[in-house]
Amino acid sequence: MKIADSHNHLHFDECRKNLDDIINRSFSAGIEKFLLVGIDPDDSMKAKIFSERYKGFYSTVGIHPQMAVKYSTEDVYNLSRQIDEKVVAVGETGFDFFRAPASYIEQEQIFKAHIKLSKDYALPLVIHDREAHKETIRVLDENDGWSMGGVMHCFSGDTDFAAYILSKGFYLSITGVITYKSADILREVAKVTPLDRLLIETDAPYLSPVPYRGKMNEPAYLIEVLKMLSEIKKMGMEELSEITFSNFEKLFLSNNAPKRKERI
Image (cartoon, rainbow, N blue to C red; front, side):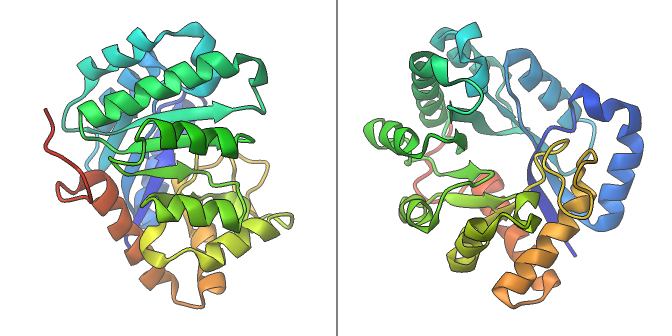
């Protein structure tokens, strides 16, 4: 199988001790594409440098909404200095009202700056949306945030929210949460999501799927996400992995992505 992990943080310190083993297990499991997601300027640079070490690794530039009070919109625009052929998206950005509800204003300002950066450099967005569905849609609507395409990372909404996101041309990304007993709504979302708008991710080192829940997550565990999705979609794992792999390439690596303009 060819598998793409559309969102992880293998460059984090938590992974450093066992990094070689993690990567070897990933390759053995069929993971061929990896997107390392930045959460602040230094971390974005770290992700980019890491991605340059391995074939099939790519990175993003972004400031996580939990970090919004520490940075300005100018810091977001300065991320442009890091953009090169290995940087394939802007984010993760958005809102997090679970961890940082008090920084609503700062999160929105930073979010808008990411949208501008994505349009300036014709890169898709990686959206972090936690307990902020209405606000996320509002900012994307008001700032033409859909135009470069993107993905709702670690999707956590219901089928109505999914339908709106999909209608705007965005992708939905599924994590190991879909294997949890409590994830009935997410399984229903996966059931109705068109195959050509579906991505899978680990968010490693977080959100390990069953039976690895409680352990540090890693890309090789995407097999468990594929198993669950194959049951939901009633199709073979290999076919499903090929489709999500192709979706990864269309969103992040294709110069012919819908509505994408030439990079400036």
